[in-house]
Image (cartoon, rainbow, N blue to C red; front, side, top):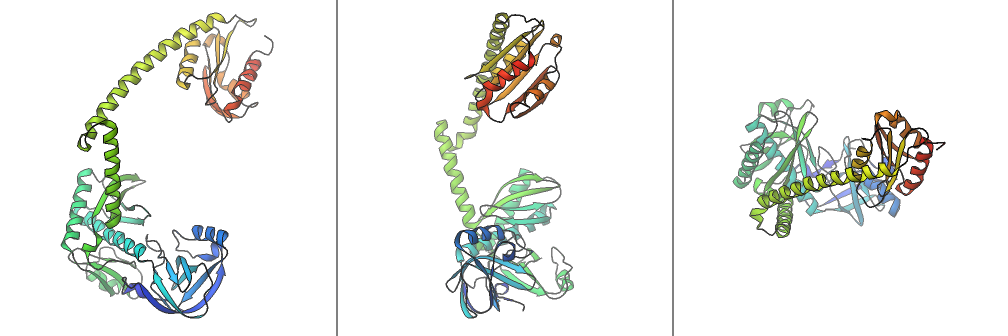
Length: 422
């Protein structure tokens, strides 16, 4: 039986009565249908923790099921909590935490969640229309997330100038407080009316019209006037395959994020001992100082590694095989220092460096070409005895132990493998 969808004509209906047609237990995949986005994983986890969940069919509903990038509504059906709503062709399935008797039931929508979703979804319509009409960037997908929303637009890269222009134009529509209307018609009728995105489905279709802006096929829930969207905040853009993902938030979300952003800015300014307006220049100064200190420290580390490496090479006797082998376990020094030390040891003829950093488990094997070993093959052989990963070239290889606590054991084994008969 086809479920009558009350939200199609009145998205502001918070309570309703309906007839329970069926209530069946279901867990895991049996909870949902093919159109789920945020559904069965969470519902199945709840079923495991709190007992079975139930699939309820009603003759009519105000609950919106996950569809078109918009998540499902939550709320109550009688004494049962609605934890998921799934669109299964012509029927809406309500996933609840308690069994419901066949017969009449009172439904109540979680209004805070519903209104937030309406703000985000209608804001998306406005933003997509502006990107399309002003910048020739059509929207190819939409996702209404728990914190922020995204649209993927196709075409040239949206520069900061385009993002700022789109946000300003979208907010102009908000401030104009234009009417948001529901329209019905066939695909041909909607196309003649100037619909932004054509559809190929037959029969009567539903579309959302934003006064003097756009007409767009959509089955989602929306506010009644654009002023109810609140502020639209475009937060950034990133490359997603062949498209561009624009991140945004509307209404209370935009308000909350702006507050959090300023709180972060103020905290950073306090750490930098400057005003919020001066944080960029102060941060640039700190980064420049850090880079200068890093360059100086790196040069000092390199000089120290050179001195220590020469001393270590001199302290090691030449073996019967004609090689000097500097085997060292580093504890306290940085992995960068150990790597520099290995490079410097390998400057001496007929010398091999076998170094392991105990804290990180990083391995550095190097040799002077005159040693005539194969560091890459040798590392692979040593890692057969103590698990880890690594690779490199004939003269230099590096890796990492799966368990850094076995660093000393690994170094002992590697040294014995290199010189089985010292």
